[in-house]
Amino acid sequence: TRPTTTTTTVPAVRRPAVVVLPDVDGEIGWGNSGPIVAAYERRLKTLTFDPGPVDGTYDERTFDAVVSAQKYVGQPRTGRIDKALQWALSDFSYTPARPGREGNRVEIDLDRQVLTVFQNWQPVLITTTSTGNGEYFCGGADGCQYAITPAGDFEFYEFYRGWKEGKLGKMWNPVFFKGGIAVHGLASVPTYPASHGCARIPIYVADYFPDLVELGDAVYVVGTPKARGDRYTGPVKYAPGPPATTPAATPTT
Image 1 (cartoon, one colour):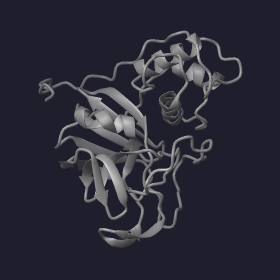
Image 2 (cartoon, one colour):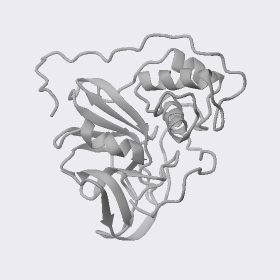
Image 3 (cartoon, rainbow, N blue to C red):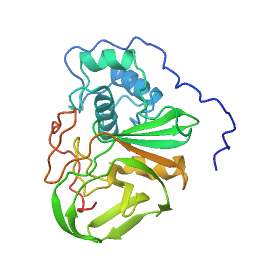
Image 4 (cartoon, rainbow, N blue to C red):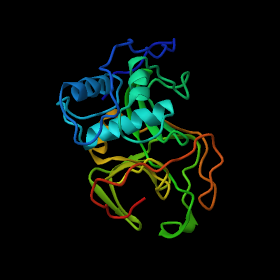
């Protein structure tokens, strides 16, 4: 259980120190390894993107962390480190959507497709997510409907540990915040909205995500939901990333 927050003043989000990162000649991505990769993994971890172990190996977790960072700063979601991301990570600042709200909260940004966990008003995790794609589907608990993650103010009310079977498939460690909509792990987390309404996160992040939040914590879903029929009217142009490199998962929410 986290310590109770007693301050009456909302602390500002601490700005990370500016650092000099190794110069990128071209791009760094899958298959690269060595001290330069380790330097970027270390910086991503410091900024609360989770690249996994700082081992100098550009693997799946490094890829996901890079995509998360690219989403957050509004760059193309390639999963590769280039000069633009080098500068963005060197001089980085957080941009919370609800800076004056609860110190312990989760923000899900539908436009950027990122999820941020705050504890005592400071980010402790920023991860890629994939929310509702707006398409019409049948087979869920509520019958036929559109796959929309609604914007609004919610709170976590139920947690299920492990794989939860549903009419639409499986969810790993789901934490529910509205009806059957949850933050949960799945092997497939595209760079764009692809779910039936839930906020997908990588499975290895979902392993510990429930330990970062508590039932009753505020969940702010911000941005522009997909409109009915897979239409989007928000400010971000979604661009599918490179081909999937993880095994196909059982369809789920």
